Amino acid sequence: MDRTSLYRMLAFMQKRKWVSLEKGIDGRSQSASLAEAGRAAMRRADPRWANTQTDVIGRFGRAQWNIFVGELGRLIECANAVAAAGAVREGTE
Image 1 (cartoon, rainbow, N blue to C red):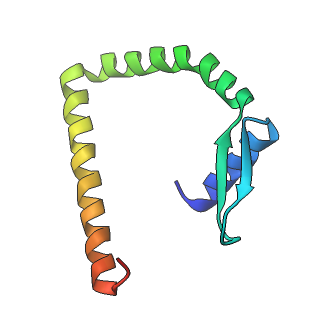
Image 2 (image 1 turned 180 degrees about the horizontal axis):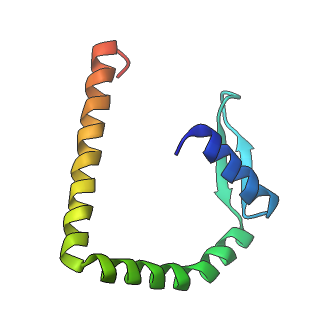
């Protein structure tokens, strides 16, 4: 998720009192905490999300879903390795 979308979504959730934001140590960062209203929203959404996920996996096919999830894991590992190699090259690790 890009930074603008993240901030927009956090503002949306903060307006609804789903999250609280606190300034970080360095003044440039913030920390978001899930508020009770946010927990309640998640509890309400959870059964619908579970049904949707079950429907998507059913249409996609369980075997294909498992392959897809495995490949996403490999992609994450590759991206992390590239990021780590870049940090080492730049001396920022």
